Length: 105
Image (cartoon, rainbow, N blue to C red; front, side):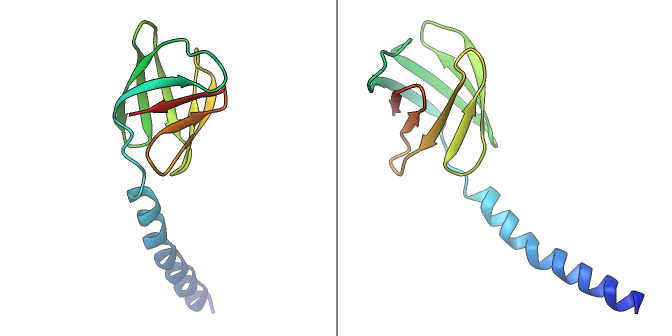
């Protein structure tokens, strides 16, 4: 009986693995320079340089600080201080932020 339970548990774990690998592999590439469009909030900086390492983003504002953000899914971003905003990655790889700004490459 214990042997059957272990076999079922192992099969379930192996069956889930390919789905997790696909989800991680399909993260968008957000590296690059973005121009900020005020929609409707004024941009604090006109451009931002994004460097990506996996799901961690390091963002350098043109005339401001460096801050980190994290891909929380393939289409959502959470940015830490001082930006403190959540973003949605749109199909054109632009980012719509909860603070009312929109970044485009």
